[in-house]
View 1 (cartoon, rainbow, N blue to C red):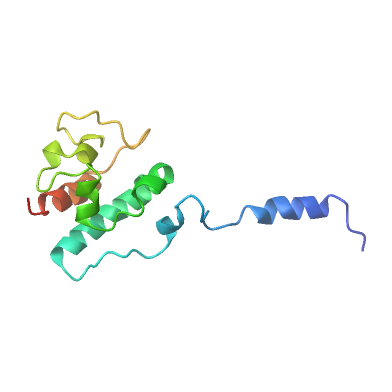
View 2: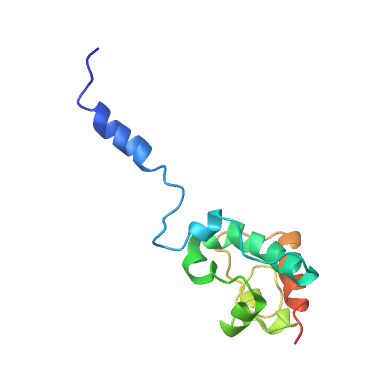
Length: 128
């Protein structure tokens, strides 16, 4: 059996793109288990919100947000105001939030009412 000279480059192209994640850009956390403690109601709310972020936001923003695994990190980053979706920069950026923000994310997509609800309920549940 004769192997064509194009077989090797074809295999490199075909199988070279099969990396699950790029460990140098932070998107590894998109695919790995979270470090969020879900043993409490607060942890369950954060986990539900994070599932939306992973599915809808991390494809562009993993390097910025993927390491956030606590309410305190979101607050310290200036993205969330405890107990107040209306004044949280993160929530104001979401299409459909209707809180007077830019409502420009995710680009070219719309979050479902359920997805918005997970994020809203998570922020509301953070004690001020």
